[in-house]
Every structure is written in structure tokens, then in C-alpha cells.
Amino acid sequence: MRGRFLIVVVLVAAVGLASCGSQVQHHAVQTQSTQVSNGLFGKLHWLVAASGLRKIAAVAGQGYVRKYFDTSNTTIIAPSVVPKELEGWTAGYAADVKSLAGFNSVADARGSHRFVLFDPEHWAYTPLAEQANPLSTASAVAAKAQALGVNVISAPAVDLSKVVAPGSDIWDGYLSSGIVTAYAKYATGIDIQAQGLEGRPSVYSSFVSRAAAEARQANPDVLVYAGISTNPSGQQVSAATIVQDIEATQGFVYGYWLNVPSGGEACPRCGIAQPQVAVAVVNRLVALSG
Image (tube, rainbow, N blue to C red; front, side, top):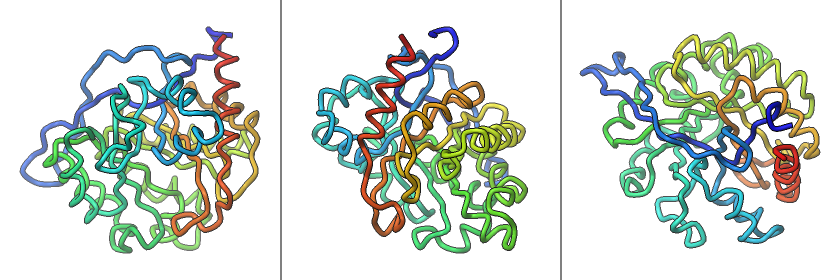
């Protein structure tokens, strides 16, 4: 199975933003090659939140989490002070930013954080003007990131199309409105938040494929990730289905953002966290990698 199914735990090869011109619209993105060790599952990469790892550890143990996620192929979304249980890991770290103003807190995390995950969505955390203007927002994000010496992985949510392309189907609007193009153009990486479709692998695969092609047309060097979730907006999705999604898309993405959400202000419909599903996904990937 190994030749057919090369998989790893978790994200990001170190890549750098290129020097920017004097004006924001002239920003360019450039990758720098680095040595990235093979993970247990091959050469795919994952992005995962420190809070998600904590939930997984609660059901599988900290030793399990470290075994599968302490790798140079991992980028952990973490606060400016890295949690004690993650200290000394070889993984990279990313600050979580949801608005341009959020970059004010990134300076405090620059010692250990080489990435910023910029997560604009149709919610209160991202100002409406930033939601409505993806190109200018993405360009401003690139300028702020370059000033701080960090790399950007943008994760524009599909629901931004409600603002950018009102009245359209959110999935079609996301692809037709220029959201993907804008954020791919000005980032090292882009995450396609397709997890809402993961219960239908053929639809998920088609959407991710189209979005990835659009992103690479805007920026041939951009690293494309796809979102997967243990319970997207409260949906019940089996580990077998999630692995099927990965099998169907691994050929045209660089890695995955593994979400283990729980209900709260940021995700009011997510309900109770399902970390056991994440464990089952990891176990299936381990078995498939032989």
C-alpha cells in the first residue's frame, strides 16, 4: 500500500515570504527549499491546533500525541506562550490571526512562531470591510507578515462568499468570486476549508481539486492544504469517511488542517468535541502506511 498511499502527520515545510516592494500591491511570494524529514505517513503535512492536540491527548495520552505529531512536518497553531506539554518539540508553530488588527499580538510570539495562520471568516472576529475585500486584505496581510518576518498560511472560510458574492451558492461563490485567487496570490500557503463537504467524498474531492487548481493558477508556488474535521459544524463523520477524503485528494494537496472543534462562540454548531475520531483517523493512516 505504501507506493499508493503516502501519508504523514503534520504540516509545514519552512518557507519564506519574498522581499516586498515599496507598495503593497507589489508583494510577491517565494518559497525556499528545506529538508523535511519523512513522517510516519510519508510526506503529507498537517496543521493542528494545540487545543486539538490537548483533546486528542485526553483520550489517547500525551505519549500518543507526541509519537505522531512531534515531527518537523507538523505546524501547531499555538498561543504566543507555547503550552508546557509542547515545549521542546521539533514541530513548527503558527500564531492564529483572524483580522489585520490581530497582527499586533504576533510580535510577542516571534521567538518560536515562524508562521501566521490568517483565518478570515464571516464572523465577528474579522471586520466586515476585510471580509468584503479579499485582495486588499490579503495584500495587507502579506505586508504585515513580512514586517514581522513570518510566513502566512491563509485559510479564508467558504462563508466569506456570503459577503463577496451574496445570493450565490456559498461553494460556487467561493470559487467564482476571487477569494481563493486573492489569498493564494499573497501567501506561502492556503487552506481550503472544505470540511463541510467531507461527508460526501466525491463532492469534497471535486471542490478541493477545483480550489487547488485556482490557487496554483494565481500562485504556482503556493502550498495548498485542505481542511478536515472530526465534527464539522456538528456533523457526524466517520474516520473511514475522512480517510476516504484524504485518499481522494492527497494527490493535489500539500497537507491537511486537522480540526477537532467543540461548540463555542467561534463554532456555535460544533457541539461536543470528537477527539476519538481524530485518533481513529491517525490509526487508519498508520495501518495504511504499513
